[in-house]
Image (cartoon, rainbow, N blue to C red; front, side, top):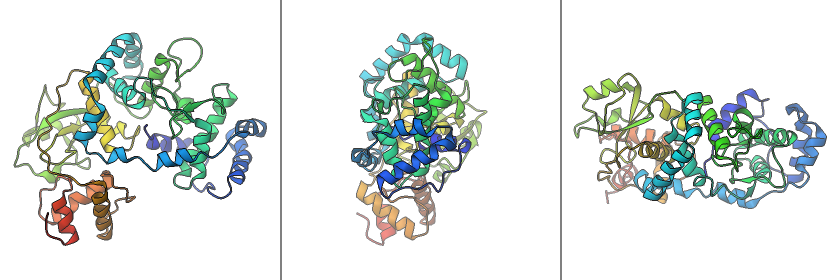
Length: 396
């Protein structure tokens, strides 16, 4: 399930400041604090009382929050795990089945059908697996937990607002462990802002109506900055003698400039007038893509680089792109090795964020800096040899 963290944080700008909101401590005391705060969000105390009447902490939510090991997989492995011929065929079939809805999404919000189909597939397998966690319990549990209260506490009051409108049942509404609801997994505040009646029945039913879910997802992507008629990624071929330090999301050039440096599309033509970054998910010997401004919007849906690139690539496959050239990437690091790498990088003064064994954006930046310092190909792909060098050991 996705963790729509960035999008939710953006939504906080329009809410009262809760950066220092209380968390932890006695759970009942915490719940009473929510009741007391509710009027600040336009929720009367009686409504808040009814909403929270049967609320309870859910330890299964915390276990799920702390066990997202699937994101430790490298891109090639992860994408092959998620993308199958069956999923491609069902995606294209759903594209035809809901052709009118996708046409409306493209007309109203400018979001390509392949993009929404990919999210729909990955989030819930086209609506088949939406999660069975009690949403109210999940949100309160995660707000009480002190890892990210600034994210989840406002979602509770958004859920209360939906409840006040008759669109949320705290006893029965279910979804993903992180509080997302429906076929494309939207948090309560996203539903308030972007929920759309796509089938014309007067209700926004994200769990049971594909048109509602797809129209709502399209509207949300537009609100996050999706640009109509523009691509998100192109697969490319890169010269072997390329300056690999130019790779990474931090460097942007016009696609025409990349072409002058020898970057060539595997299919069709590059979008020459758009700024783009060269991304190498598994280093210089693996797949290569140019990413455009719309690719950045993916990170406002999900923070995982591997998930985002896989979803973006799958969208191109649904639109007819060929299978990417996997190349022959150098061996990467295991989860425990990645944690060792993050630890040594942190000791060297790099900001890698949490030591979690996941090759995220900050870790990639730190790796590339160390590769430059050591006069190695700076492709941001950490290998056992690099780890050995940084630990002062002999290469394996």
